Image (cartoon, rainbow, N blue to C red; front, side):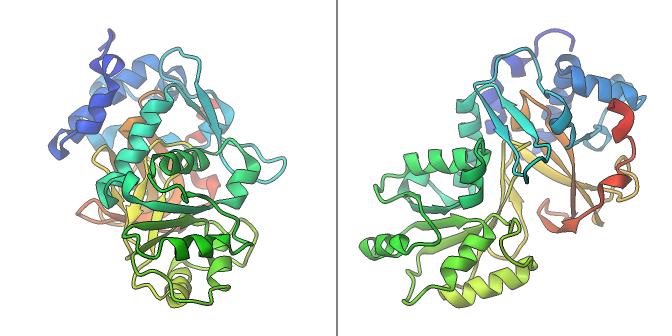
Length: 330
């Protein structure tokens, strides 16, 4: 596959993938990126892996996510239409995701959301993302901005978690059948503690994690219990994503995440990221075929477990120091 791949001609076919096609398409993406992404190619070669011998999904090497902090991760030559930066404190190195085509990114995140929750234009959307807005260059803010633009409700928008204007919006839309309240954990906790009235039962309350030093860290189960009690809801939804990938996974209330058809999560050994952990706890690896223009095969530092159904849960973070092989590129 040294020549042009069909993926370079029509990458949108990724979004029409059938479950049985995932492995073959992932192998095609691997060969395509091995040939056209110089950083990933160098990483694979540094590991001593002959790409011609990679014949299954579990044999595809996962590139450490921190490479996005130190290199321009690009498949092919292009000038990015937009560059997203990860969140971080002052002086911290931030990951950079170079986006070749913002419309392709839009197709990915809208496709992920609508796969699980239905058409976005049916929703009233209230977003609480103060820290991401403050830091700028956020893929999450871009995603929510586009979703707000797609909403047919003029009240959809970003709201200040320190003010109560959002409650007036809910009053005006008390009969609306689909309401999405989306935000970081500390902002949702802040607004939950100031509630003084019954909340619309049609609400989907979705947290995307992150206290970011604003409040004491608590486990997801405790967070969800607090939010359910305050809002009077049976379930709290969650979003799992990161700057370095184009797609998102969602949980509808049980803390177990689901991927769209073009994304898959697997686990690797905590001590050796090249050893697969089938059905056991390990480091989360992500295959996001929508990352066709950067790198689709990423090793994170999240700890989790993948179930036979392909659903997964996040249980914590691992120390960076045990990622064997990362220094091969430095």
